[in-house]
Length: 239
Image (cartoon, rainbow, N blue to C red; front, side):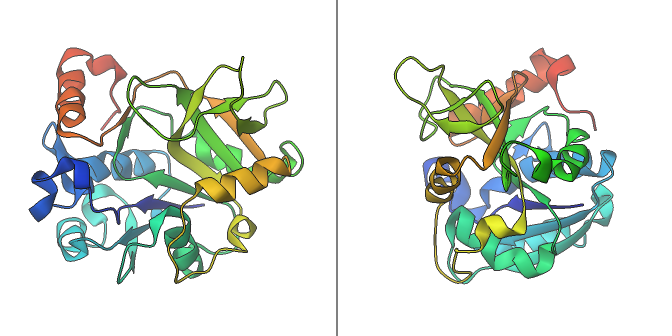
């Protein structure tokens, strides 16, 4: 299977660091955020990787090259302007092929087991209601992370309502290409409207993950990621 890493964001909350460095290249323990993903994808046998970029994308290509240093083969999907998550994935579909693929946000830090992805992708159509997407959800963080979701007993994801246990989309997901059938490949579009439409049809499965996960969206959380590497190495991704 193939994987895509989303790396096109401007990283406004990380300025001034991201004025001269794309957010996915910011380092944790001397390794770019995106490098942790690449090495762990390679360890899981997922070696065909697509990376989109917009802001300072030439620096991403210069730093990662063809991916050989990380044990993967990288193809790039440049965007003249950032197309947001759904638009960027739709734009990259010609590189991703016709089979289910994984997508990972380039600015998260996690020890989620990427070895699970291939098996989940193979079963994606067998999940509730012939799911076209499978989301990894995490417990709600102590900082804003977008729309709260929840997980039903039958394995479906849906918007959180009163009385539900709120969960957050981790930025790790599997998709069938048809999930993006109605997304224009050259126009910006976020993922949330796509999620809500598919959830209304019962076509989004999910799982809960309780391990290490950080949305590295601020300088403070970048510092926290570095502390976790030092203080709790057993929870960190293997390299």
